[in-house]
Length: 254
Ligand code: 13P
Image 1: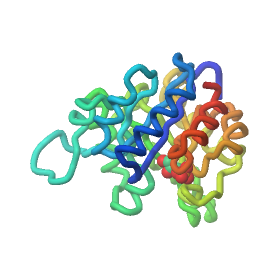
Image 2: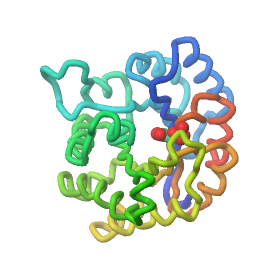
Image 3: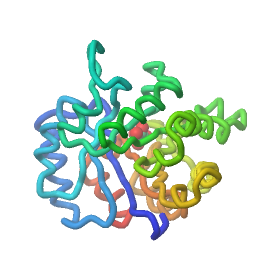
Image 4: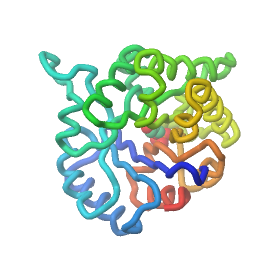
C-alpha cells in the first residue's frame, strides 16, 4: 500500500448468500469495523440482494457493489441488468471481466471493455478484473496477458476512464484454490500495469488503485498489502465469514 492512495477492499460473494445469512454477515461487519473508514470497503452482493444489502449498509461507510453488468443500456436483453439499474439500487462499483465471467460465460476483452464503459456512463466505478491462467503463467505470458486485457479498455475509452476505476489483478490459478500469488509475484504484475498506464498519463497511473485477488486470507493479507503497488484486495471465500473478512480489513489498516 502507498500512503498516496486510499486502500480499497471488496468482498465478492459470488453466487452465495441468503436473506438471513446476509443480515448476519453485514451486521457483524458493521459491529466490527470503525465507523469512519480510512479507505473503502465494498460488498459485491448477488443482484437479488442488492436492495437488502443497501438497506443493511445504512449508517455505515461501507459501500455496495455488483458482480457484473450488461454492456447494453436497455432493451430486449432477457436476464441482463443494466448499469443504470445498479445505480438505482445504490451500487457504487461493479466488477467487470471477472475470470469466472471470462471463462464460464465467454466474455472476451471487447465485451469487458464495453461493460467498463456502460458502468462509467451510469456513474458507477468499474472494477476491471485481469489475470492469467496457469498455462499462460507457465508459458511466461503473464505480463502480456494482463497488458492485453487492460489495453482493450484503454483503446476503447482512453486513459482518462481509469480515473474512476479500480484494477483487480486476479491470477486465475489463485482464485478459490488456496494457492496465493507470492507477494513479490503479485507486486511485479501490479507494477507492470501501473508502468504501462504511466506511459499514457503519470498522474492517473499514480492515483489508480490496483488490488490483488485470489485466495487472500487473514494470514497472507499483511504481506500482500505491504507491497507498494498493492492497494487492497478483492476477496472471495474469505469475505463470507465476518471474522475472516474483518481480519483482512484490519490487515489493510481499517
Ligand atoms: P477467492 O478469494 O475465493 O480465491 O476468490 C477471489 C475472487 O475471485 C474474488 O473476485
